[in-house]
Amino acid sequence: MNGTEKPKPEEIFGMMRKMMGGVPSAIEKAAKVDEGLLYEHLRSRQYAMPPEGALDEEARTLIYLASALAAGSAACIQAMANKAKMQGIPAAKVIETLHIVRFALATKVIGESEPVFDALREMQK
Image (tube, rainbow, N blue to C red; front, side, top):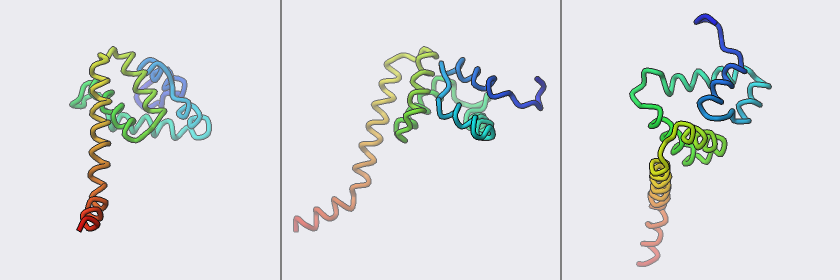
């Protein structure tokens, strides 16, 4: 394959299996109905996580896991849990990532509750 040929979907899936231990079923299904979605997804991954990027793969996986948890994306959570396992990321780092996400979401609830706090203060007058 030269630099101008697109990899075939099965080649992309093979790369995903090697990196993450599997292919998310939504990605496989998307490729069957619109192969362009698969290529766009691959392009977006390369944009977000270029080979010459500043972060190492472990940091990228933990950030991606945290984002997936915060967004509630079950498929991405599963994919990143698999990837963390394949990369041998220590359990303590994964658990700390979970704690950070939990804290961020708890902080979000408090931050978004400001109108409620204002109303409660008015009710207490």
